Amino acid sequence: MNEISTDAIEKLILGHRSYFNTQQTKDITFRIEHLKRFKSAVRKFENQIADALWLDLHKSEEEAYLTETSIVLQEIDNHIRHLKRWAKSKRMPSPIQLLPSSSKIMYEPLGVSLIIAPWNYPFQLLMNPLVGVISSGCCAVLKPSPYTPHIAAVMETLVHETFEEQYISVVQGGRDVNTLLLEQRFDLIFFTGSPALGKIVMTAAARQLTPVVLELGGKSPCIVDAGANLDRAAKRIAWGKTINAGQTCIAPDYLFVHASVKDELLKKIAFHLGQMFGENAQESLYFPRIVNQNAMQRLQKLLLNGTIIYGGKVDADDNYISPTLIDNVEPDFPIMQEEIFGPLLPVMTYENIETVTAYINSHEKPLAFYYFGTNRQAKEILAQTSSGGGCINDTLMHIANHHLPFGGVGNSGTGHYHGRESFRAFSHARAIVTTPTWFDLPVKYVPFRYFKWVKKIL
Image (cartoon, rainbow, N blue to C red; front, side, top):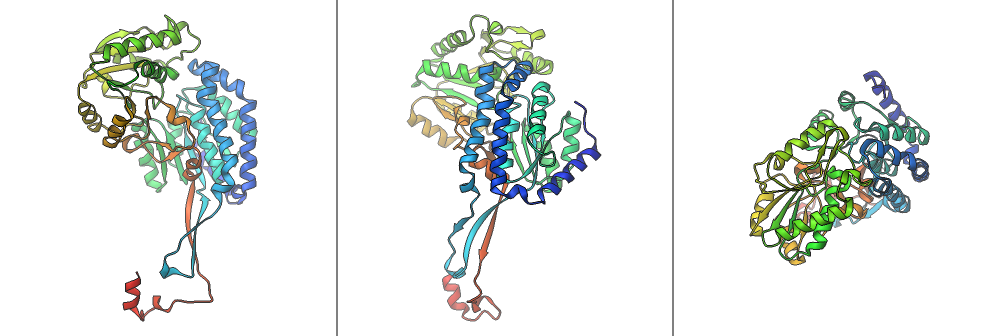
């Protein structure tokens, strides 16, 4: 993949602006037709997508479909089904002082967008926002991650064969190319990645007053209370932590478990990990690999503190780290200072739930929040904490409902998407008041006659 020059980027964006100014992307028929083309292309490339994700991340065909391809296909179907209704102008009430004027909201595309995707779900997190681009009537430059080169190449071919380059384009390269792109003026930047990189994107966007959607991450807590169904909790935590080998922005990052059920819960988590991957997860067709050596080295350092009670096996040549449970973890350990992004689950114990909420609230707001216990206690804990989203008695599943907005809060992100929210993310809600000419209110003009009466109405 040859990296692109500044001149080429400027020319590419100019081409996108010219294409957008033809007005054709605003046509609803055009949008639906290109959503249908997009769906056909994903179906056509389905095997190549699965093969590339295996080469880049050792994802099984099943996991690739469930966590990447199917999510994009469902998103496309949802937009095709509802776009006409979403895009329709919405009539709004007018206050008495504006009568007989009428009011409405028009949804117009923002223009030319930049989407920068990460490597952990490289297909889903580039292509899912693209659905919103097409649905809203925008144009876009897509920037895949260089750390997953096989799927990046497949996506470039898919886009090239499906869309005109002036409409949707793909730019390949490393951080230098990201820097060049961020120096340009876009109408929206959609970025998924770490909070540290999100700050860089937001700083660059501020120079151009460009709006941003930042889908970031953080340390998402998982709490198991004394009243939880331990077998269900253990199985769902084991699953949520090991999808994509834990390289998931909404994975349970650390576990807070009530002292009275801790030993039993950890035994059950270990049992379910064995049920899913066998005695040696490295031999399983269903356990992915760490993306590269830099990530491997970072994760290995996190194994040095605490007591490993399950797993802990490392094979650097294979980019493999086994599912690992780490007990006797203290808040000041390195593993509690950064998002783990790997199959390591640190465990802390509590007696009073107030200890847990105080700990969570003393740190940055997480992207996800998981609680296992009674609905009554869950309601209280949700009221006392904040997160981008979450689940009660499950993990990850809130991302699977396209009727729910997905996004972070505070350090874990700003803005949201999925379903109708994806359409809105790339649209501007334009407020319009239409005033008839057959009547004209004299009170709004100087010298403001009957002002005392007007003041009583306002």
